[in-house]
Image 1 (cartoon, rainbow over the protein chains, first blue to last red):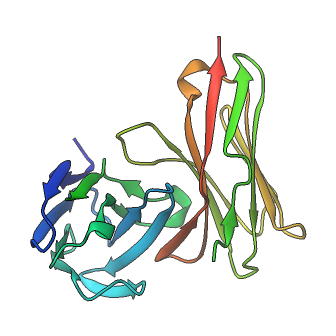
Image 2 (cartoon, rainbow over the protein chains, first blue to last red; image 1 turned 90 degrees about the horizontal axis):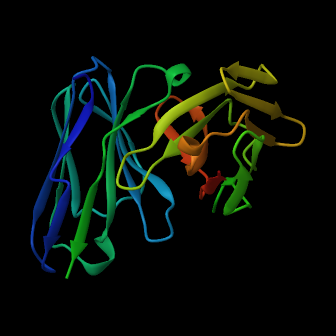
Length: 112
Length: 111
């Protein structure tokens, strides 16, 4: 299936831990993103990558470090997790805005 | 600072009738607008888009209208179907690398 897949779907962890979320797209898109949906349901951009290069870093704390080993993958590593990091994280990819972004199904991160 | 606003958090409509969802924006640099639909526990799904050089775009049951002078767009769904019950997000962009989303409108289609 052509899609944006992200793993894991659910992640429960303790404060202070380090965790990673993986994202892969097989759509051949050049651009990938990480969005965060907070408790108020707002979807906010975190990072944009185009062909493995960082384009946008939307004032995200340094504890969040994206890594793009190739244009099909954009992983998100989070250090020293805090309670406020609890949210749903969505990976997405796109070729052109005419066809919109294709989103993954989300990773619900709960920090306890 | 929310640059894209959906002021109606919810909308209830009878099956077969028209659903009209509204969206306002403040950033005059936005040049592309999109609507997404989201079911629980799934990612948003792209519905329809419109460039700022147009005032209307239609795709099947979905039509998006853009009024640039009023910084307003709307999504019409005709006729509404039970499967349309979801959260609808308006989004806008001034470049290819970032979308600004509204808070969403939950649509419930009643049988």
